[in-house]
Image 1: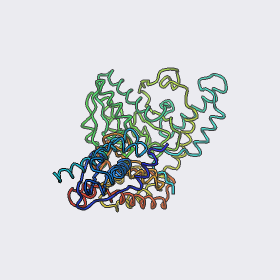
Image 2: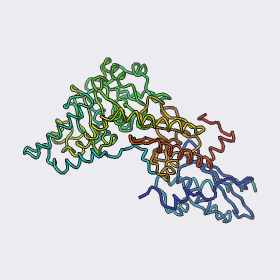
Image 3: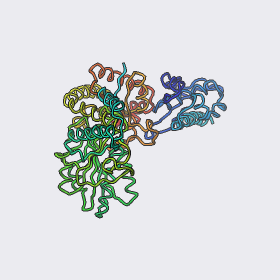
Image 4: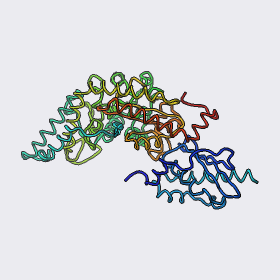
Length: 124
Length: 396
């Protein structure tokens, strides 16, 4: 059995929504280089709808796949709905992660939350 | 192209080893402890194997104990020196910061049982300093255990000089030579080695078999109690197919050692030169005093597991000291011990090439690593911060 599911490998080898959004409405960065994972999310939001999302990730294959999948799950969603995104949903959408890689999906959830928090701060 | 570049993890069994193993399974299946002819034939094969191993490292057959591998040999050597030392009131042990976990974890256990352990620094080049060893030895030091060659960065320790110091100071010297046996010439007498651990699968022998050399006069402590095999020092029916295959592999590796090392060092240096062209990268460990098959680099701004997974897609099997490859929180203790900070230790890659590596394969490896590093850096927020000047580069 391979280390990762086909979905994980697919998102790792062909990450969706890779890159940056200039003048993004919300930016969130979580993790640190000491631990070996950093995720940065950029959101474009119009009328409370996430119209575009991009990410940059420093980390292992499952960290890259988790960020990629998380962007897919929130793109086109209402901000309030995106806030409900859980790490479990990210992991399930990837057909599972190895137990010791679950923290990658947690990081993806936190990165989205951080980007939304940033958007809310800016729009108080 | 399929390139197996993880020979420090394990090697492919040689044809000679496979033949020796199957020959034993077919023809020498008796129990060496049985008294009838079939058993005694097996016993003959076992003792022949012991003589051949002893010859290769300049030991006596009685000084070789067959084990299940390097880890068992390390455990038995350390426990032996500790228990024998304690009887004389000596409970201090010296080792190095970047030993294999078979040694470090055994030392942890001994520390919990009242032993005091000093870990010598290995410095930026990954080599212990003799003056620091001299200074660390005390009246109550019962053991110095320092590996011959490091498994991650391949650096080779001055074993003969360490042996001299230990002999002069009356301290038992053990070396974990798992990465060295079959790859470097070893003479336990000339180098004043009291105990040495080896593992067959690192030199094209089978997994699950190795040996411990213990100089005459060292009273071995048992890890496994039972029958009278191995002069009562290691119970359990001998793994004769494994032992015969190990000897076949070691004989082959030893006779071709010089030629192999010359060839591999050339390929290694070619790869090192190629990878050095990658900006903000660094070779880990001394460039010269290293195993001829070992290449270990850190690349700033990226993480090692993703490097491995992408290289695997290109048919290259390699290894990394990143925490993400092991499920641990910290990256490799070896890379930390030579002063690589976490951020850079995570982005490490170990390539351990084999004797049959070619220049074409080396070029393909260089090309592939360059591509993979550039790809991962293209979407790394760390790399962005470094290139935009928001963060200082660690590797210049």
